[in-house]
Length: 80
Image 1 (cartoon, rainbow, N blue to C red):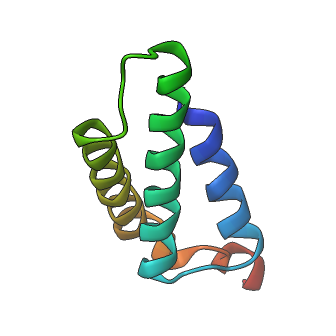
Image 2 (image 1 turned 180 degrees about the vertical axis):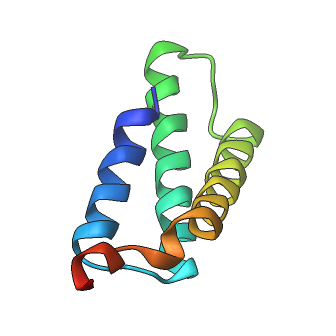
């Protein structure tokens, strides 16, 4: 469910040469929050509470891990 939004964020980062760890952290937080809100539509009993916090933290960690693996060199392929 989160693969398409993450792919869009990665493409945007590559196109605009975004290499900041903070940007990837914010991408992850936004996508974690988006995932929570998307789940709330399918599961009306889900309240914005601990599940939201868990998804936001997970998104932030995912964003930072992606930055460590590939984000530090985003857009460098266009310069060479």
